[in-house]
Image 1 (cartoon, helix red, strand yellow):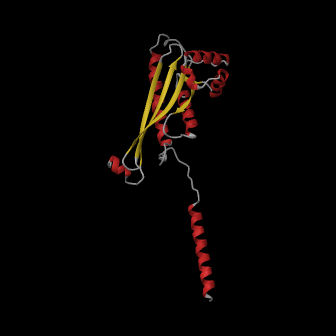
Image 2 (image 1 turned 180 degrees about the horizontal axis):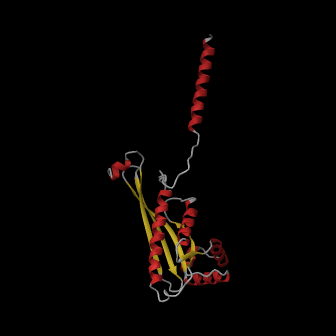
Length: 224
């Protein structure tokens, strides 16, 4: 057999084998998670493992406290409809871009509130229409005059409400001498009672370590 032809065929075969191997590694795989499966832990940013417990904790604590206030109020003995909440959005002030999680956080908070016995959330499209009609942003509603104008606009849309609700995401980052760091995520809900003007806040925090190596957790936090 001609040596040059043999070498050429060997190289060609080797190239095809490498390309085939790379193609196999590039395949995407997926599986459906059951309710018993843990959420995947994001390696670079917060994910479902972060936001889900923060939402459940903050909403549960806030509504639980309001439940006590309603139950002990003067008109508690009389039948009443659900208290209506105007949820104006999720503001991200953290060090990370939260991407599509912003919308999911909104929807999960909305769902948690609507599942309660005392509260219901106004449909988002009405809230957005009311803000547009007044040419206001959600944070403009902290000004009393703007709040009154928005309240009047929502009443014209036949969507009166009892509370304003804001959600804010913040974070704090602690860095080591190396490339490892810890990020503390805080989800804060602020509920403003329209009649009294009183504000009630509830926050939930989750700490998460990010490491460049597999031993990063052991190095900074021990074996616990």
